[in-house]
Amino acid sequence: MKRSCTDSIRKDLESKIVMLTGPRQCGKTTLSKMLYSNYDYFNYDYPEHRVELQKQSWDRSKDLVIFDELHKKKNWKSWLKGISDVEGIPPRYIVTGSARLDTARKAGDSLAGRYFLYQLHPFDIKEVQHQVPHEEALERILTVSGFPEPFLKNESQLYRRWKKTHTDIILDSEISWATMRT
Image 1 (cartoon, rainbow, N blue to C red):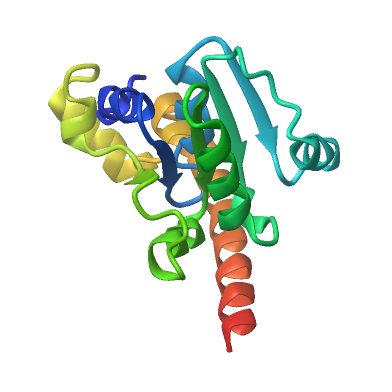
Image 2 (tube, rainbow, N blue to C red):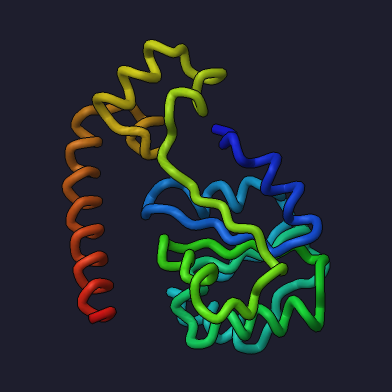
């Protein structure tokens, strides 16, 4: 399902790094991979990808390079600034991650003027109105949420199981994040 921000993100990628934030499971990585078919993908949570990122060994001929969970890398903003200043665009760069990625806006903005920030949310009625009839969209959002996986599958049992797992993950993550900050 095409997201409403897709065209704006593509346009911005022509001249800026795009940072795509939002809650877990709202479709950040999926959207990023749908932007261009010719991309390199690196997830900082995957050890082999961390090594490749350190070597900066992505394919510069790709249309897009996706850095997923890059905010977990120490000094990630300075690292990204260096790449931007030395190599520029192309290739296009998109950085995805949780709302903590939004700290790029707040802390020592070494990336100022080099990026645009997008906050992705679960589907709402306006976003899906051209692909799902209005009343059906409202019913789905009310019964299985606007998060892409349960919304698209539209199965109550799956949603209940998904919700339990999702809620546990969010609570654990946010409690850990709050504890680290204090």
